[in-house]
Length: 320
Length: 320
Image (cartoon, rainbow over all chains, first blue to last red; front, side, top):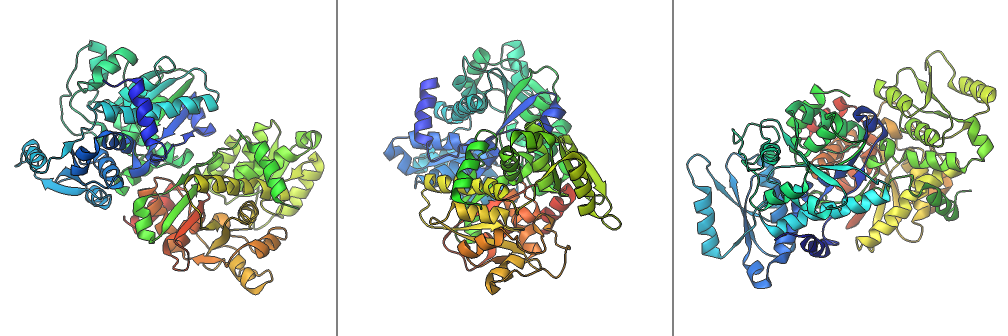
């Protein structure tokens, strides 16, 4: 079970291996938001998202012999890159199953980080069957994107850093807003900040399974499986391990529109000089545009793996 | 005279007021460069460039009574914003003389930071005369952009941080490449790193007055006063205070083309997820594309105040 102790242990394994990302802010952004907004810039993490923390935590927690056989992950995005680099830096192989329609740059990056990419056709092939066969054949360990205690513990180290950096910045009271897909980052941060700051998950409109699950008290599913520009954080339903943690520790979920996420990207470009992908900007969007948050908020800017066309479109649509 | 002691004193005044920016790197960027490249991301500094350090250093060094009357600066860009915010945070007025053809966003930001913007017409009005009249009338202190010991000392704190962060990253040997206009940043860093790392100034082609001055041993001037996309670092000739420091401490200057600067912006977007302006990307461009540098280099990414059209053009021209 994931606990604060597991996060502290992960932090020791991650020390010196994972970047301590800065907590950014900007006077002109505060003026737009009408509150103080601090931004934990995980887009500056190796591989461009917090996923490298969970990847490193999980790979480093394996017994030597298990690890040496290698790991496997299913992902077209940030988890793929995080696991591939973590495995490479441990000197062990990784197999990443990616759908054939994933963006070319994500194939290239995952391979560049040392991942062995296995491509499958979403329409005609069974991902789980291919993965199971590969795992059995080569005795690979599956690293799940969020429903894994060591992955959650790795993401929770973001929360430990937020606690330290909030103290350095003199922040006594705040809510922490997280970009939420399956809930690994949100659960980890909520555990790390338990008793200090309340955490609020943020999601894109139409894919607000976590907000509805928290409101109703039981796991809800999204009507659609895809169709948001926030591809990195679209999951069908909260995780079996993550949801009970969110239920116990988080405040109500926040929901932002695609346009609000794109505008947050443009404002982060202009005032923080960081690159965010849409799914990595939803928490910032909530902090900028949601009326129901307190005077001081801290949000995760969780990823920056965005193709130039999407980024350019955000800048053109929302001139600042 | 600027010295290591003056930089250490500035660092004390800047502590907690100026952001300690991260030293970033990325495996895929190293692969493109063929060497290890570490990037001191001063674009993440308040106001989007290292100029806030010099502004804070100079304003905070003034005697209370002098400071309370206010400061004045001539700038259409990063120095304007740095001085305006530093003055505001000290609770004193600032007057910034800006040419009427400066970008709208720079007027807006300088005003938003609390600067009183006085606009003049480059073609028909005498900036120095207007500034002298205003200064005399209101007893304002002029903060020069680079030929001021306290400004150089403030920029030198970038060098102190590089030294600490290089130690943390286990970097024993490296050259440090700086974006160089009037030489304030370069001189400050060279003094801070004296005896540790050699500093190499980088400039845009056609505006390489520092490289030619270092090569010839006497200050050289650029043929043109403007016309580079690297507007932030175009100055006619090295500073009277900065050049002797550069002569004593720096290695040969490096020169990059506008296209190399734009490509460095696109690569920083893709692999570091930071936003750079062309003038803030010339040192990174040298580290990526110059064949004459050692295996490990550290560069300043000195500013990120770029208009969306220029940034978009860089991404479209150099797809990654």
